[in-house]
Length: 352
Ligand SMILES: NC(=O)c1ccc[n+]([C@@H]2O[C@H](COP(=O)([O-])OP(=O)(O)OC[C@H]3O[C@@H](n4cnc5c(N)ncnc54)[C@H](O)[C@@H]3O)[C@@H](O)[C@H]2O)c1
Image (cartoon, rainbow, N blue to C red; front, side, top):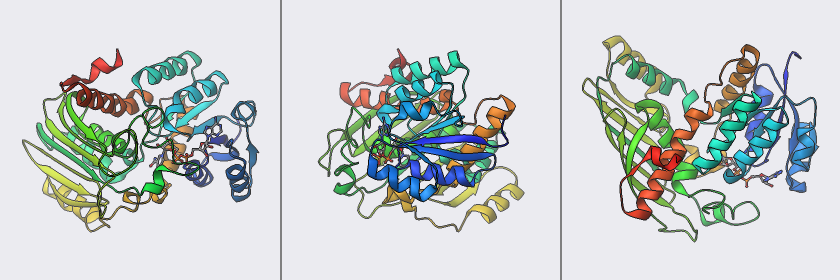
């Protein structure tokens, strides 16, 4: 195997972040980019000084490429992942893995059959503060988890849902929803990362302040498999926008994280409490992506690229395999189903 693994990126909006992440990542080399929009392709080829393909099928034939990063519209991810796997390429797929449990199961099946690695983007899982909190919870520092509150009061202007690259957003067919499946999926995934999988949901949604088909606000009650109860609130209507907040408490303690800052951390030994606050409080509360989707940092993506390099070299599972990344999509689909039917929905039922 060559010293560095070769990467190709398809979909050059958010895919631009993938290119920057690959260039910074140890053990990775950006070989090519692909977009069927000629103007975007030419701009990125110039910016990253790499090969450019207008056709995805052609890029998949490139022998220098070991891993394909998929950053196209969400409803295309599984089909394009299956194409890549069948061409013998490993895959990094943007969130959400896809927008329906059925398509994700198909991708999971082909990834297993072909033996390629598939890692998913949920950059908040690579964040040190979140990782430390998860470790502390698994060591029992929170005790029995009781309450989980996840809140994403973001804003998206009308222009986000229109123009050359905007009309797929907020549609059921390609975005799989709106504020929940697109933006809030990160928040829901983080709640699942920290508190465990969700068993049952009751949801509500509506379109309140945009001209879109799906939804721009969701409220849900979550019953976790471990018995904890939680609430999830996602919107792209908040004026002014605010930062994501996740607040959890258990029988022995609690924490609250607001945007990048740890508001309080009241669990585990005193030295851990002090250390966590020293490391993670007083960071900017604001979250640039709350208003501008492209303001996301590429650092989390870089860690996921480096993790993929190691997963291939060591022949192990990537840090965020499909089985993990699909939990939030299954749960979001259950929330939408609950809102449509007016009934509580078991998350497992949406996979059938
Ligand atoms: N991780 C994050 O924080 C984050 C942030 C923003 C977007 N995203 C995700 O990234 C994905 C893309 O979002 P975006 O905002 O960049 O969308 P976008 O519409 O700006 O970009 C999608 C690009 O894919 C190209 N494309 C589509 N099908 C193609 C094909 N078959 N062959 C070649 N090119 C093709 C389009 O021409 C377009 O340039 C979505 O799944 C979104 O959820 C993730």
